[in-house]
Structure formats: C-alpha cells, structure tokens
Length: 126
Image (cartoon, rainbow, N blue to C red; front, side, top):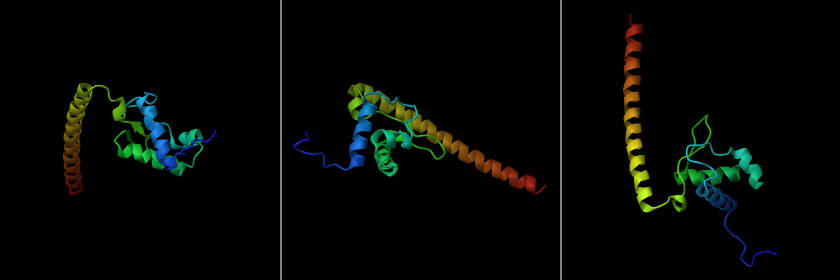
C-alpha cells in the first residue's frame, strides 16, 4: 500500500541517505574501497549519473575520497556512527595530527621535486 506521504526527495538524495546509513552500520569500513558506481547503479537500479551525484554528496561530507585512476575509499563514518563525544574528539585530534604530517610530506615532496629539476638542469648543461 503506498505511503500517505510519498518521499519527495530527489532520488540521488535518497540514495546518498541509504549509503550513509550503510556507512554508519559499518557495511563499508574506514580505509576500505567503496563499491564501484556500476555496482551501486545495479543495486539501486538507477543511472550511473544519479549514483555519481549521491557519491558526490558523501564525498562533499568528507565520508569518501576518490583519486583519479583509483577507487573511492571510505574516509570516515557519518556523525550518527561516530560514537561518544570523547571518541570523536580523539579521532579529530588524530586526524589533525595526520593531516599535519601529510602537509609536511607534501611540502617535502615539493622541495624534492624542485631539487630534482635543478639537478636535471645541471646535467643538461654538462
């Protein structure tokens, strides 16, 4: 029997909500690959473009990360699955520490690239 109040949210929003619930339930662990768009399109019987919009929502919330040429990876759980406030604070502190280390590594890589370019120029002039 149809609901008296049909869900008027856009399909990609409903799919994003369901995927967010899956994340909160631990169906996709942090650090693990997220299912491919094609697989999700089959699961939800929706167009790939609709699934991509839903995944974009989760990506914009910081739950997923996609890298070109690589699979989408689960970065975090939704707030509803975050646990206690102290757990969340610890994770936030750990995230900040890791993020700081990442920034330092990026900077070091930039310096190394510049040095390699300098050395390449010197060897060309030999």
